[in-house]
Image (cartoon, rainbow, N blue to C red):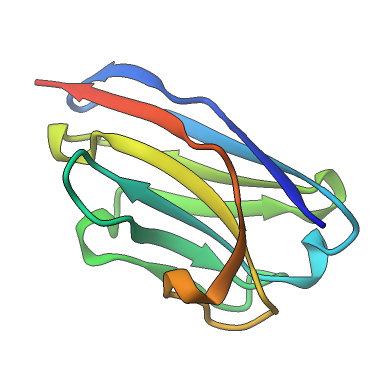
Length: 124
């Protein structure tokens, strides 16, 4: 069993930055890929970024490339999402998730553990 707890969300003006953190409990964190997803009102939950266990592979959805950076600290059981140059369209609830294994995990179905989500609101 893995429990995931996100933090770091909030309200920020367009052009600003936020850093999301997700702390995991359980011994499997360092052995699986981790991802960040987001869900805006009325929209499907979609992937933002993912990273394999030793950062061999990373994935970013096109809309965040060059602005967001995923990272992880396996010693701290924590995955991060640094978000720069935020735009109003980045407003959503952000979720971290643990994948079923260590691979290039880009679909919701690749993940079997989810955090409760943290709200990010970007004002124009």
